[in-house]
Length: 420
Image (cartoon, rainbow, N blue to C red; front, side, top):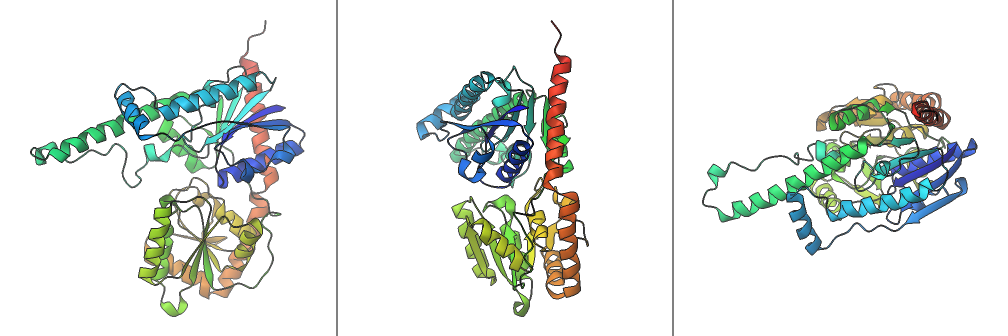
């Protein structure tokens, strides 16, 4: 196949997944060209050796205060914001180039700014397959509140002038969210097939857009995460960006429940992050007496070394759609203690390659102590983790699933095209 790949991804799990997909498809002889934006992290994706060409087109998303004011007025009329208009123009430019290239299929991926990508509505001559890592969760999930949450009753604030200013801001905010949802639904309906990374993600797709996708599990490359059989050290690892949904704060609080003589330090590895949130984590750890060591943008070699010397991976992400971290840890022989939410319930089998716990801090602390103090349990979870990655989560199987989906999408479009 001649495949046009589109993405607008930062560094992180979605980029690692796309790297694996592109590499695997290239090694099977498919011709691949990539379209992305100047805002995406193409260096982290690192696929130049596997593709014929990477097309990086300019895109600007940041807006000034004056533009935000204009966008507020637009939202009252249900018009697109400046950010959306810029993304639409960018995707039209990409689509024009893609449709000139005699490709067999568009393989679209998530967008860092909008999640559900806009490229599908502009590519009309090709079958279109989207791998969506997750919907725009801020529109459909409480984080910590739903975007639609109402203000207090006006009856309580008749004589408070500040309330009416707050009311106007709430109205504008809600209208802008409704415009985003409208545009997302248009994008969702523009694809022939949508792949998701877990059954949990498929349920999220149905809740958000009213229709299902197709589960296409990802895989782990043991060559990138080798088991080195190194001595384990008394620290617990966390993996994920420094943003509230990754819940590093929950990990710190759980560790604080372990008595001090046994309390390990927490080494948290992330890439992108919120500086204010990271500062709050440092303050929290100091207040609770937990040694917290945040590390950003570590090398692959350093990450592998940490996974091979840590004593446990603590996975506290909220409703993570899939989560590479538990499987990457397992590949390095590291057991996982994970909160039983989201896609992690499909990758971590309680008592086999890790322990599943509730979000109760005492439960998390108790599970951690079991792994840290029971050497027989540690060895069993470690061995099973290495085995399950090889048997169930191989890269080859993941690429097989994607390749089958690409061919099915292509053949379905051909079958629907009337003969001349």
